Every structure is written in C-alpha cells, then in structure tokens.
Image (cartoon, rainbow, N blue to C red; front, side, top):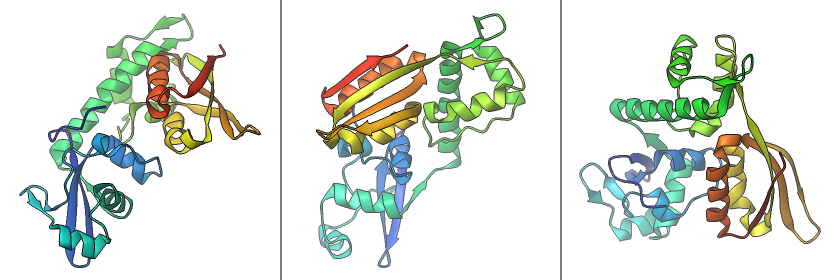
Length: 234
C-alpha cells in the first residue's frame, strides 16, 4: 500500500506537557487504531513521517522535545501515543468529502452484492441512493464501507426489499498474524466461529459479502505475507 497523500490525510493531535504534537494520518487507518484495531505499517499510516508542533505551518517538533515528552524519537512509538491518547481533527470540507466518498463506495457495494429477494434481480444504484436518502442514513466518514453495511441494510429494508448475497470462508494462519488480522477480518463481515489448534494456529470461519472475496483474499495475503490458508465453503 502506498503512503496516503496529504490531500486525503487528516491531522491527529495530542496535547501533552504544555505542547501540542500533530501528525498527518490516513483517516480510515487512524480510526481503526482508535477503535482497538491493529497498528498498520507506518508508511501506510502517515502522509509525512514527521511529528509537528503545527502541522499546517510545517513546524516540526525538535528531537530533544520528543525525547523529553515521549522518551523516544521513534516515529512509530510517538504516532501510537498520539493516536491512542489524542484526537483526530477534520475540517467541515474534509468531513463532507469523506462522507461523499464513503457514500459512493457503499452504494456501489450494495448494487454489486445485493438483490431484490422478491424477483432475484439487482437494485440499480439510483434506487439504492434514493432509499438511503429516504432512510436518512448518516455515513460515518471514519468507518470503512464494509463495517457500515449491516446497519445500512437494516435501515433500508423497511423501504425496499433487499438482501445481500454472502460467502462463508474458512481461514487458517499462524498465531503471530492474529493481531494484524482479527480487526481486519471483523471489518469485512461476521465471525461465525474461531478456535486455536494445538500447534497454536488460528482458525476462523467468517461470513462476508460475496462480492468482497477478492478484496478479502488480497487483505489476508498482504497482512500475512502469504502465510494463510483459505477455503470457500459456499
């Protein structure tokens, strides 16, 4: 994954010891970390691998101050502290842009994966958009489209008949990959079953939207460097 661009990045901020420390972060990954998800590769998280006293002015924090406050000058250590204990800033324009981008992705996801169960035909995107407007659905700019699908479907069902086609996938991987995977797996769908083998491997059965299989497999391979076994069960 390439580094997030400055145009798409938001500022994460932490006030400590009378100073303000800021970093430019990917909004989706930053929110995932604040929700308890795994910390991603630093090159995926940051738009600029620096800590600022004022990010908009480009005023970088001196290394001696970082060492005094954080007891480290390591960018990952400091970024973790800022994200875990600080707050994420969004301008009104950024929030609107992110919400609109997420809305488009959600509509595309629903149009690709959902059908009208009464006649087994797909819903056109325009029909889904109108139903979302009628349901007054609020899009969370920080959460992934996949993690919002279930609540959106629940809100849409009183308005249009809609059902998502699902796929069940079994996963087996080393225990060392669990921390990097569990949050990502849950964001794609619903964990039906999980257990540990006697040799310390994690086995999981997850149900995800059928149209997300390629993205799901790509994520698994990326996070585990290919050290994962999968099986499509339906």
